[in-house]
Length: 205
Image (cartoon, rainbow, N blue to C red; front, side):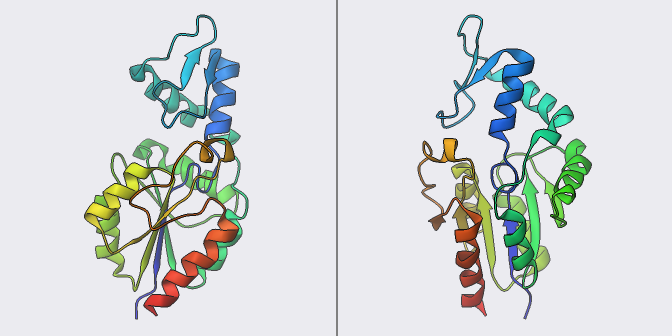
């Protein structure tokens, strides 16, 4: 029998992102980041005049952050230990929504905190790439972990047999973000998520 497969997001699942991003926006651009917003639209405001940062300016800021500031990101508690345990019985792919230009940096960033697994970059919905990974690995069972509801909906549409776990590792964001409707469960801590994931793999076995 083939091994199970864990497909996990990176930012706000394995590595904290919004807090260091907000700190950098404040320091380098005098921009306030209000984490209670459900997405970046409307969450970024210029301190000088309280005007909202327009959506077309947000992506260049994100690109600049990932180009020069990835070193600010810190490991989510219990994430490395949980993945090490899962790796004993399953294959692991980190499916991260960055362009391929950032692939080497993301691999190095994760390796620096002890996470050494396949990293695949992606843009847009994650349903199709998850379906492609299922075709490639032919796992006995698969679990998908992500912090964004849109990606759970995409996976539910394109790979409905995958178990979907909604995780938001930043407490300041988690308290304002409802559970993803298309996810099977919402668990925001890897210590609690680990037994849930292992149980899903065990059911297939």
